[in-house]
Length: 115
Image 1 (cartoon, rainbow, N blue to C red):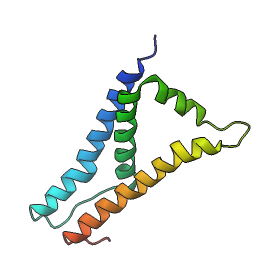
Image 2 (cartoon, one colour):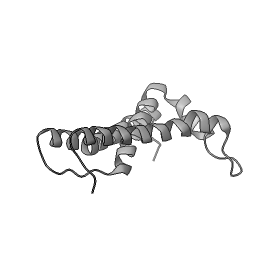
Image 3 (cartoon, one colour):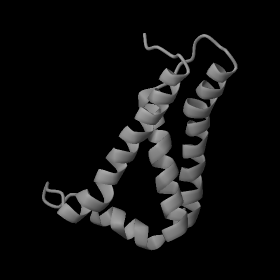
């Protein structure tokens, strides 16, 4: 079996990210706007939704050069390269934290409280 082309993989990753975003971000926010009293969200799935959406988009737009950057981001002899941390891992961590905080603040503004 041959590997899927880079951009096709990007479409699949983007679809997963958008599906998770719809399920874990859009549905709870619209449910609260409709007046439902309780919604359930997963912090991890909100982060995955953001990361998958961005990674899928980058795979589609940039293609093979982005895939090479991902391979360069792998650790060598147990150590991460500074360039990989700066340009690959740090943005993913910031995006995940930012998307979680965005959803949490929106839910709090709509009257949602954690249990």
